[in-house]
Length: 240
Image 1: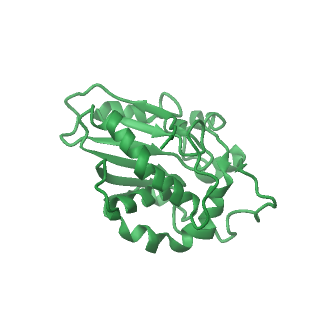
Image 2: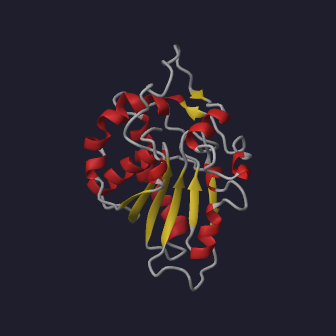
């Protein structure tokens, strides 16, 4: 598979604080972001927790973002979450495990997902549990935030344009008012909104309402056997 994956990494020097069973944490950003979401400023970055716990951290740009190979056009009968989740399971996670997990003595991969980074992770976890071949990476768990099972009463999004675009942009002020609720982040984080912004593949948002929400529990969620942690649940408004 000729797949390119861009992103960021932080591999700390092993210290006494390193847990006995040490995961490789893989960050999966949400829609209209990029891997920089996990490295907003020197004060708000995954590298601080990575250093303090001596746990390696990698954040990828999901397919179709920055330099990562897209999964579009989507084959007939499939969907954006299914395509990128399958690629995550078959190619991306095995490669990350080989390059960063094994050399650093990790015992598993933990997926740390935000918003639309969640659905591909659940597809991958489902395939991990049900695939006929032995997985080439160990999945230890999934952390998910900012992604529920219901859209807002308005339906969340405008009618589909005709012809549909390949990508869409959500104005950063709209994103910040929805995904970084006023008062929940430091001002220096809001100042980075433009830098970590990225156009979103249109098929990604179309699939949310068309196929993901009606089917994910039975088709994917029911198969997942890895432990799941729902982060900042008190701020999750059951919407994207």
